[in-house]
Length: 317
Image 1 (cartoon, rainbow, N blue to C red):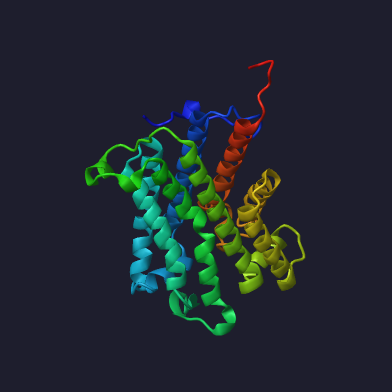
Image 2 (image 1 turned 120 degrees about the horizontal axis):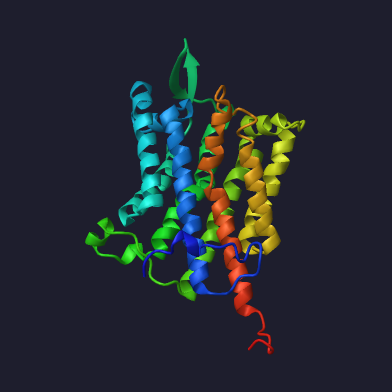
């Protein structure tokens, strides 16, 4: 079949009962994952164009010195944005595969960077080994899991298109999707649960494991008198929520995850997390759109499943 057009997308299952049709669910899945993947790459690409010192350890882990890394960042960022625009305008399977692999690779780069840190010396950014007290090795491991929102949506798009059973020549052709089946819908549901659980657990580790100063800054930026004990407690709560959304994904729990992520990731802006960038920190919030798109897809599925299992009204039948 051809791709679901944007006009076929609707919010049934979110703000009104779902119609229970697989065609509706497919359009909802398709456009949620497609827009989510694009926004993630736009947010990530924007930071490449702007340039970001926080990326230097990732380059260094692959033997790329800061001087070269600064020059590569805008090129990588521009290519990320280009891939996002192609996905929105006229998607190709090869583009979706690239987005999945690149999202997975940039997540893997976190633990590969190990205990490298960036610091300014005489006005220049350099990369060196971090001390144990900085918890950098632990931070990077948790960050790998937290990045499930980056590679998850393009992976699910590939699954919807049957991308892993296609011939080599099909990769350069237009992205198309076969009609959704109940079995495939359930597979996407389970994988979405895994990704949401993983990103919640990964973020939780920033609090109870790493005791990340940035999280303290985020809460203080909105008037919360936060300290280490605050973010440790929040981290344990997020850990519980991560396991809960995977093991018992009830509608209120998924809604809680969605609202929580929308709010807490937006704290990058008032905290001016990348110092001096001000409103440009909105790209941090945009880059994490997978954290919102995946639970949204789960809510669509819950609405569809409820409509499919609801008893038929004899007066209507």
